[in-house]
Every structure is written in C-alpha cells, then in structure tokens.
Length: 360
Image 1 (cartoon, rainbow, N blue to C red):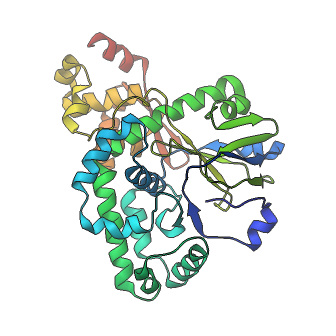
Image 2 (cartoon, rainbow, N blue to C red):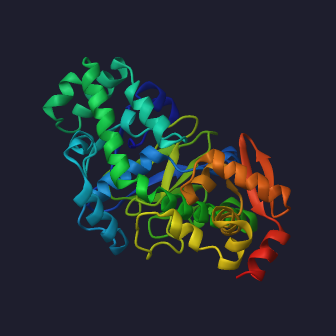
C-alpha cells in the first residue's frame, strides 16, 4: 500500500497500483512530512471506505492472532462463508499485496463500489497484476483475468459474496463505531487544533513530532512521504486495528488509516438486528413516536452530526426511509438538519434531547 522514500514527483513517475496489507515483523518507521499547507488541508474522512474495510476484514478473518472482540464475528463468518468467496480471498492474502481495483479507497455504497469492480478495464487489470506479480506469486487463474470478461464477473461476484457474509450483517456496527470516532476527532480538533488531532490518532504506533508524523509499520518497509501541499486524509478503520496503512498514491491526497477504538475496542462484533436498534430507544418514546422513528431520534442524539447515509447505516434501513423520518422529526422541532457539501447533517435539538431524557 505504500512505497519507500518517494517524494511526490517520483510518485507521479512510478505509480504502483497495488495495496499491501500488514505483516508480522519488527516495526519500522515511515515518516510523513508536513508543511503549513499540509496541516491546513489535513482532514478526517467523512464516511467509511467500504472496500478498504472489507479487505481489512478479510485479513482479520484469515488471522488467528486477533483481539478477542473479533472472535464471535470470525467464527460466524468462517462457518457461513461459501466456497464462492475463495476467488476474492486468493487476492486478499493475510500478508501481501491486494490489487487496487478490489480495494478502491473511495466513499460510496458497497453496491456501487462492487459495481465498479465489474467495470474495471482490461488494461488496468493487466497493469495491476503485472505490478503485483513482482512482489508475490499469483493464482494461476489470474492469467485470464485481464482478457476474460466472464472471469472478472466471477471475481466481482466473489467479492459480493464475501461482503454479504463478513461485512453486510455488521455494517451498522461499523458505521456506529466510525461515527463515534469521528465525533472524538472533531472534539480534538475543536479544543486542540490539528496538533491534538494528530497526537491522539494512535499513540502506540502513530507519533506526532512536528513537523513529521512517524508511523510504526509492521510491514518491514520504511521511508519518507512529503505531502507537498496536498495534506493527509485520515481514515478510521474498525478492522484495521493492528497496523496503520499508508497510500501515498491516493487521489486527491494520500491517506493514512488508524484504528477506531474508542469505547468499542472491547465490544464483540455481533450481527445487526433492527429490533435491537429500536429497543435501544426508551419504551415510552417508542410508544409516542413509533418504533422506527424513536430509533431514528435516538440514533441522531447518540451520533450528533451524522449524515443521512450514516444514519441509515446505523439503523439498517434505506437512505430514503432515514431521510423521511429525519424530515418528520425536523418538522416537529426535534432535530435540526444542515447542508454540508452534498450531505444533510442531522443533530438533535434541545427539545429532542429533553424528550429523550423525559422518556428514558
């Protein structure tokens, strides 16, 4: 996922379209150098990166040496994983590189991103696999991937099966954890600026020594990345908890993943159920507003600043349904909605919070 000791000019000349997962070994330091412009443009990702999270989850699935919180998820996923997922796992090894076209680091719905895999051009596939073959052996079937459209469709279907089994049932949990983490980062930025944001990312492995962010890598690689005015995108990851990942080639700016551990590190991952989400709202409030709408208000109050897609993900309902319920709550004066870029951002009003407290 990263390359050693390349500056931006070198990256433009030697772009490698592959991603590397973490591996065991002695940690070495990767240094990210900031200018004043970089600090001004550094930001936290507004939403999860579903394909990045899926590839991280696939590695956790294959690794027995993982935190206890993944045990239930891992046992359930392995027991339910159909043979069709094998193609995808062949290209997401526990230790090694994963093709970029499988791990798009883009926002969007999992369905849209899976569709992008299906539409990957043969040229991109061939270039990516050629670069990948320089680092590790590839399964024999990949020789057909750049020339056989049916083979690509089978791989995309395998990714879909993998997502459906190991990620989709747990996606609301992922969304909840990442939304909570984002709130913590926003508070750090509000009260201590970028310095506190960078200092608190993940002290065991990520250390801020101005003007350099030092990242302890478990991959056996080290180097320097000079951002040169592009800034850094900080991407929280629920499944990427063991080692940060750096991609200096990402557009429009490089990114660094860090573990989203706040409050959720010791909570086992379990499948989501709409009933459980609705039950988290007080019974009296459910009787007043209805089960789903009470759950929506409760979710907005516990995830202030969430957008409609995040709200839908937390509750396991469609985006249109989440939007409709938020609209009714807004008209009743229980939530407020602001436009931020292309998103609607929801926050409970004092009346909404008082209603929740009154019926708790």
